[in-house]
Length: 325
Image (cartoon, rainbow, N blue to C red; front, side, top):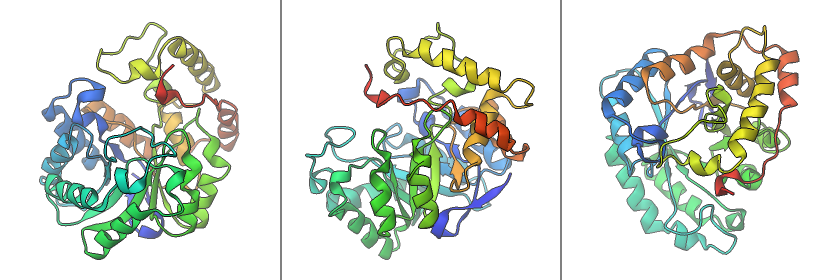
C-alpha cells in the first residue's frame, strides 16, 4: 500500500481507502455485520488506514460496525464521517437557510452521536454531507464546526460536494474554511480537473474521491439486463435507458484497455490516482473479495501517461443523474 498526505492535515493516508456506505445496509440492499467486519479487517490488514462513513448510513449502523472493527486493531486508523442536514431538499436549494438545515444545536447533537457510535473522544475528519453555494457568503455551520474543533471534538473539517454543483466549494477552500473535500471524480466525471482539483492543490486541501466506479458501472460487471434489488438506489440512478447507454460506453473503455494488463476496475482507480491533487480514493467495500481487489490496486504499476490520455477522452457530461429521469 502506498500513502499520500491528506492536504494541510498532514495525515499520511492510504491511497486506497474504505467506502463504508454499504455497511449500513439500506440503499445497497441487505448486508450482514459479519461480512462487513471481515471486509474491514481484511482491508486494514492490507494497509488501508482511512475509512469513510456517515451518520445516514444505516442510521449510524456503519459507524458502529466500524468501531467494532477498530477495537480489534492497534495501528492508527483514521475515520472520516459525515453529518446530513435537517430534512429538506437534497441537494439543498438556493432558498434553503443554513441556520435551518444545519443549526448549531443540531450539529452539536450529531457530533456527539458520532463520537458515541465511533467510540472515540475526537473525530478525525467531520464533513458536512452536502452543501449549496447559496451558503458561501455566511457559512455559519462551518463556524460551528470550527468551535467544535477548538473544543477538541473534531480534528479536521470537510465538506462532501453536492453532486450537481461540485465547484461550489472552491470559494470555501480559498478562504480556509475546510481542510478536506470529498468529491466525485472518475473516468466519466472529469469536470473537476478544470478548477476544483487545481484549487485543492493550490490551497493544500486534502481530496477524498468517492464514486470511483460510477456506482458500479466502471467495474464492468453490469449488462443491459442487470437488475437491482427493489430497495437499491441504483434503480433510479440507472433509470430508463440509462443502464443500456452506460454499458455501451463502458464497453468502449474496456476495449481501450485491451493488452494493457489492467482490469477495468483497476484502471478506474489508477486513473483517479494519476491526478496529483488526489489524496485517497474510497471505493465502496462490503466483502472480503472487494476489500482485497481494491486495496491491492495500490501496489500495481501506474497507468502509462498515454493510456491516461486516452481514458480522458471518455469523459461523459450527463447532468445531474442522481435526481433520476
